[in-house]
Image (cartoon, rainbow, N blue to C red):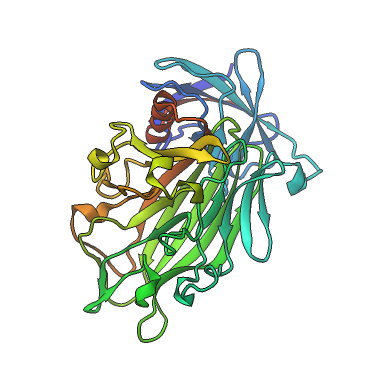
Length: 414
């Protein structure tokens, strides 16, 4: 008779007691997802794999234990985790059992074009797509500003466009009122380096900028597609000099009803002296909305706490959403800041008239980015058609901000 070993853990940190070797074809592993206080719906569930499944000589097939229905799953880029999106909601407080079957590795390797979620590269961009529809595009090449504008506004290393499920563009690359805002981007505004002020946010002062450096990794799959890129925050005054190295990991999930992608950022000071981020009312990870929303009466910014943008400025909401008409139809996007981020819950800058907002820990006071010490941050962006539903965004936030409990049931030979 097979022996069973039980161990409970959070998906972010756990111990497997059984099976220390490499799993073989036809081996079976089981785990249960305990939803906790949150109904698990329309959101990826990440499961840390035991070592036996990380270097398996075969493919992993995920099934629901009850009925044996196949569930689409995918390994993480490093092979240490498995991710899937439940076909049906796992209600709050409920438990669902899954099985991982190790099967002989397929001899045929799918082409990127056959995956449900794809990473597409050309000489200027990387895009993440559902099927043939590009959902978001990251600019690897320098994009020139509009004719007549200062060349200092030249920029790479930002996401634009980002679209809704109906294909409406809800970002703007070089908005006419603020040419230094670029779709989905990250920059610090008021900083000091070796006694000199540096503004990486607004390039017109010619003290700093941010740009793309290299592509590190790309992935396509049936649950997500991703890319990993390196950016540099550059001191421009007195000649270019890198101050911060930044790595983005961007993942788009196979969720066609409301597009969702995550950004994981790691900034590291590569100079010999620290970069000081001064207290300021904005600066950090930002979002700039559609060009059609420049007039205040054409768009609205809301949070989970208020629909009054002035009252919501510098509060600490779970999520911020924006919406307005694009080509005659209401649509928009929202942003979540993960609770593990520095100084969470982070304050948010809601501009009183422009369609932009930014999660900014600098609002709470000065801090340093020390040489060689990584500064990590995580955010999720979603896009939707129509007026945003606060209950839907609340549910999406809860799924993002908390992980379900996983219980493994691992079998070994007699």
